Image (cartoon, rainbow, N blue to C red):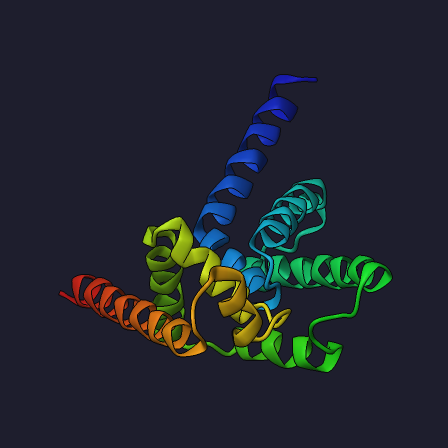
Length: 181
């Protein structure tokens, strides 16, 4: 490889990394909004990043990198859903996923900041709290079944969920005030 080719390759790598870092949080939020399973969502994000790198030479710099990245992620989500459908009933219809994906694309900067704050606040929860949220919002089980598994009453489970929601709301509001201030 000649010196010019090598410097162009390095410049391309730097451009890719700059764009990826700039859009990474929104890409992650997008995938996490479409996939209830956090582990699967993380895998999809990683697969998407690999695909973005492999196809970066096809990226048109005149177009929105974030939109391009999310469109690739969307196809990875659909592929994941196809694999799931072979194993068990799908959680969400394709129409629902398309509606969520469209809504994500139309998010205002304030909503995107709120969503990012939510992700960070969820990351700060205790592991048991995160697990409860995942169980409750994955749609795989009823609150009654979750309560029974945890040896709690349905009412106590709802109260715990409400406590976690209030905690998340306060955390999000604090983060957003810090960003504005």
